[in-house]
Length: 241
Image 1: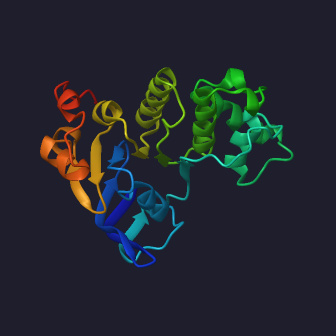
Image 2 (image 1 turned 180 degrees about the vertical axis):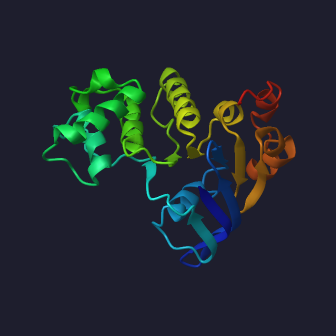
């Protein structure tokens, strides 16, 4: 699905990323981790073509024309008089849906149902909790049935219950649709128990591979300057299929 090979990104005179590679195929759940300022969001923006790369390559498998995306920062004004149906439909049409046909409404409602948010269809966006809004954004990312979904810190602003529910939905979609997921996260538990592979970076690749191989004390210390929570996480064993 996604092939990032020896990619570097220079912004101004600063090399933000150097020689980073990431491959995500059907059914993969790739977690991108690292300290603040380590280049995680830059990697996502480069993959999406929002910023240029200075060397290396970024490509998707031929035929992959749809990529679902959930940004870390939501620019939508929550006071705008819109419903979850409107927001999800914008992912289907590529623009704000001033008029929504019955034909377009069906996949929108199906996407909301998949993420367990069909009961929110008629609500106002302003009335949704952080977890509910994140479900709606996930439905927006899924509405076009993309084979690849990219998420930048989807747990931001969501409570623990909402975060758990979100990753359960992602796991279910990954398995049922055999889609690839690439996600930036700071959550060690999520990375260890949901991801099939880890990319640990701090301007360059520190470690990559399955969680038990990538999240070693040595790799975490090199990335963050301390071990952090890796002892607790690694001691629990890996739960992904």
